[in-house]
Image (cartoon, rainbow, N blue to C red; front, side, top):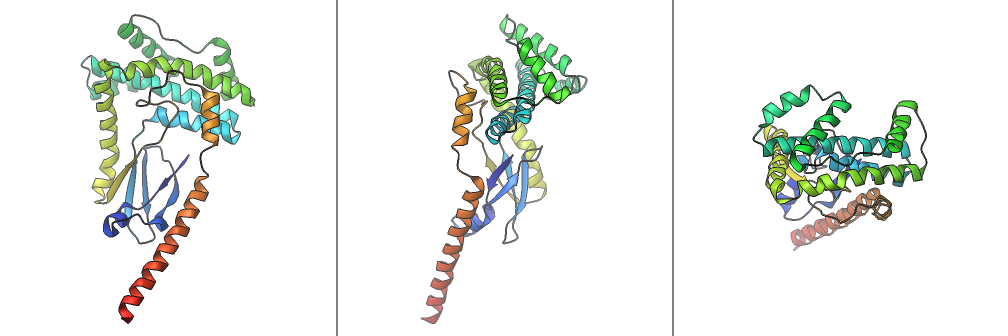
Length: 267
């Protein structure tokens, strides 16, 4: 997954964006994009979104691009990371601090079945009812794709994503509700501060970037429709072309500026 970034140092120095500094950068695992612009400025772009949000967007993009195995893998990971986020939020809501949570989760980190069990228990305690889980045909498809190398069809990827969305929607609704809203904001803020530390240590300017994702902690939708999400994603502009257009604009601005400076000197 790639995002478009630009140099904030150039913008601060000149007062307007340096279109020539626009570039496409791959999103790293830690959500911190480090780049050096043509002027030699080192800058950091900090992704605000948490991992399950980004994974949901990767899943939809994979369907658009025709990578249906990748879509199912990303939808699976998005749901698992959403489970983890919910458990952490529930723990924080009940006075369990981050260090204790991380220590406890460490024993579950490599075992998805145990993570699922922890989520079911936390959800049951918080809501008094069991969560909606993936139906058996969807888990069987997931296992065939991930463990047996099955090549799923586009429709299978869409149907799987819809099943994941139907599991995710009630969790997202709870996380956006009043009892959790402040806790979620704090958790997101902590992740953002951790990511910003790299820029601070490098004494470099940092900017933040938020991506409009399919699963979202902030955007509330009555129904998550994966087919519609795929159609909307397909209409997004070509990022490579956006960067090329920005560079063309930047070159024209530089030409005008240079001619203006030359004209002032001649006068």
